[in-house]
Amino acid sequence: GKDFNKKKPLILTEENINQFIFPSCCHAIPGDDVMGFIDNKNRIKIHKRSCSIAAKLKSSFGNRIVDAKWDMHKQILFDATIEIKGIDRKGMLLDVSKVISDQLGINIHKVTISSDNGIFDGTIELRVHDREEVKTIMNQLRNIDDLQEVQESCNLGVYDNKEKINNRESPDLKSGDY
Image (cartoon, rainbow, N blue to C red; front, side):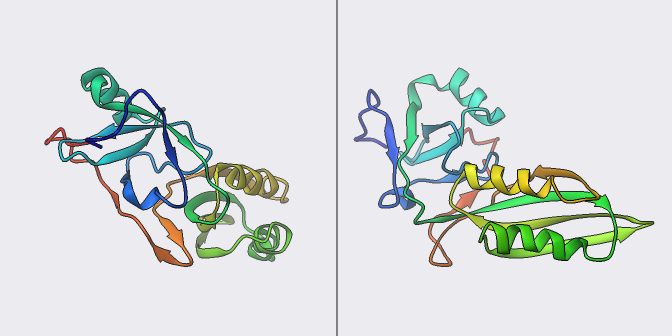
């Protein structure tokens, strides 16, 4: 962060992504509008511009904000979690997995679903390349009969060939070291 030219946008690529920190407050992935924040230890943390923490950083530490842009080529996988809810029926999980795995070719990492009084809700953790894949998955899931709600939850990490390559961390609001 110290030797960085703040006048030029920071370009996030497969080659340099592990140099940055992705705080857990907003879970930025390629396709998100992002910015960098140079923290007290000269590390650059990448936030979505829409993140509430980012808004506070911009107003309080504007001189430590840098523009950031993605230049990714679908080589690295990012976590995405989608929440689903609807009317429980036989074959619902099969229909959901067919859309994600068969039609879209996306790997399902984890599924958690529970049903109560004929209503189910759950989460599906996926590995995706970018925000566009998340939108496509959600749009396809909305076409399933009896699936009533589909929304994105949190993204948890960055993966390269199934290995975590950089830390996601919770911002420590007390220290001002976002």
